[in-house]
Image (cartoon, rainbow, N blue to C red):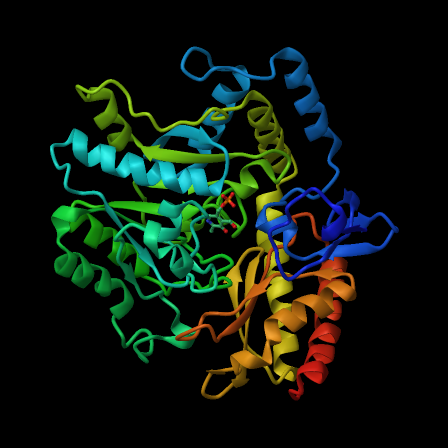
Length: 453
Ligand SMILES: Cc1ncc(COP(=O)(O)O)c(C=O)c1O
């Protein structure tokens, strides 16, 4: 155990004073320095897909480090980078064929924003630079990605001075519909809102629309209704705006398909991804470009677009990601993710029957969200001062269950929810164990917060 007061590390989380040392990981479990076991129900932070401690990945990284540990992107490529790009192009929707490697989710989204602007510059429309985002979303910690984000909990308001003038539309959150409409009678008001916003803000200023196909931590698996992205695609085409599918969490199998957007019948212009790409074994992110977008750059008078960073395409990260994706294919883990996701969702739904506060269980594959409410009939959020999510996360940790939750799917900071994203290798027995630990943690939390369970 390390105390912040005795450490030279700046841990940033002001509310915490001591830190356990993670000693090793195996499958879905982490073990601390005292041998205490933790069931990792969030897969690191929604990144671990193949589980902890897979020896093949460590071997691939060592081999690459022994061959060449770094290459300057402007002059060299590596076998690992080339092979990984081909593998990703084969996994992505048809027209997305070109891959830019970066270091993580924030850099992927930052570069996608810049690429979208460069795309319009190359086509003689330099005034198109603003990105429309959605509320209840998170795209990263840089000031540009915070500007695209719509999470009150991420405290974007603290950084308002540095933020870009990027508009936001409401999230397609049917359980807490901001328009108080009901699907399908609503005819997708939340999607047509994009057209209205573009008209009001001026299409000549908008470069792109960015959305997580199924929302991650900021909305715990908010899943848009059928037809939503088809309508979004149509609107983007009408106004000459690029559609960025933000797949930092949903990419590489997490929702039971290669990419989350493939649950709808649309193809985006850019896909950004990170976490599952390397299953957390090395820092890694990417932007996948649609053929016609890449062609615009190849045909442009300007020589290249400066959208890479020192560690773009880092050979060891590429080797790790390549080994991870091969391991997933060899062990058919995306199919397994879908099947275990169905099993876990069913078990959570069953728990919700007997659990007063579990209002909504949602998501696809192994990206599942639970929203807690004080009234299941009206979906009324719990009072924020009750601190339900925070208490649940802490209680679960004491019970050896790693959870992550944030408030904020209501109209302000209210709306308690947790996002479950265990590794794809979780067994059915381990799913049962997860649900048991969750059930008892909810019960204890209700007692601690004075709520009835
Ligand atoms: C959906 C989503 N986008 C972007 C990011 C930022 O990624 P990173 O922390 O790798 O920069 C995150 C991180 O949690 C995320 O969940």
